[in-house]
Length: 154
Length: 82
Image (cartoon, rainbow over all chains, first blue to last red; front, side, top):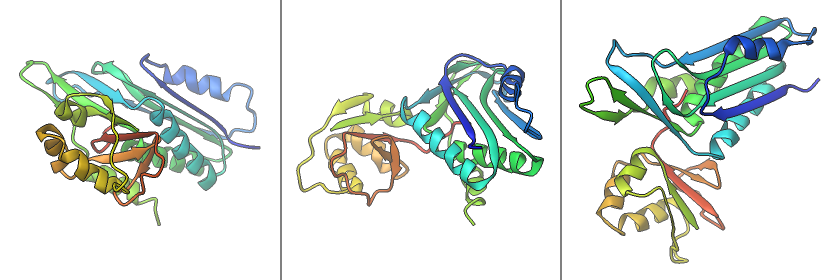
């Protein structure tokens, strides 16, 4: 059976548990579900909020390309990706990746692959707003994220 | 074609989008960036970092990619989502 892929780019928050339950509902062929949620950190109490800018249209298209790549690499039954934009406060979720498969290995690997690729390919940019209001700055891309994405190339 | 600018590229250039009409001699993304950089100090500063990424019609491309009949070309910093 083909992998069921769902991609959402939205300002609203989400409930990871409810999304996983909805995805698994009535799917008796599933043996494994991996749910990854990326959260907004408070950076030691210094961060007031993140402002996430995105490229509407390309964000959905690029995430879809990455999910199709994942479904070609691993025998997955379902993939759900949600990425938020706009203002996000510490403690709130930013990104959700759910992978479902018959066995755990492919669900774990595909979820890690999806996150590594999303961070370096999906057109989103984070700006930090600090508690002391002295400055707001764009988060710089990290070499370690590029390295994490490269490990899937071999 | 429509040019789009995001994040600090948008802030440095001072606008989020505009219509641009490069001459026919501009064939690649790299040539288009050089052409844009001559339009003003704000463009030159945005592109001088050498880190600006480019997408044509909502797909990533490299600097040696042909512009062809692109309808929409976007310029933005390395991605920091996730």
